[in-house]
Image (cartoon, rainbow, N blue to C red; front, side, top):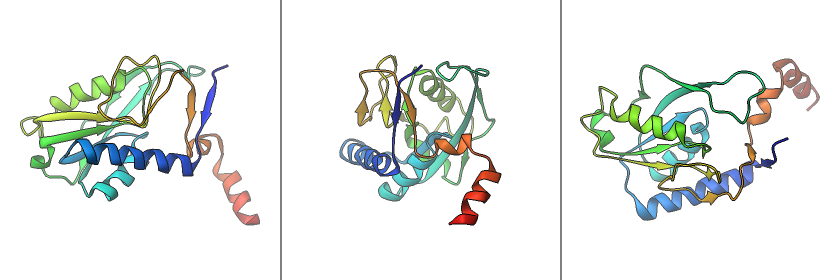
Length: 175
């Protein structure tokens, strides 16, 4: 069984704030690009703190049942979702929740640099995440927590994957 790192909302928000400070002190991005779904809450908070436009890349990893520790084949959506102008993509900060193997971040940089509408505007791509696992071969530019092991990180919203809408309705009838 994989060891688990369980993260509360309070802890999560503190880590995102530490990341914001690291970015603010060391880089001046012109757009934040989040890798969905893991980066969704991070990019929301960072965009509010740093007052920057945002964009999203949607990636799905297919690895099959019972392989929570394995990286599957990456499938990229056709388009970036963003209201940012193409010119905003000069200095990109690519964000994910964690650097697990490093594959997602590496492939996302490559995909982003080849993405038709913005590729001619990109001068620089830097990366950020909340956690870097020990076995990750990717070194993010900004990362407040570098782990000395490879735990399964249970983030604050992850429990919703295990609960049905029926159970949520029942729970909310009581309270």
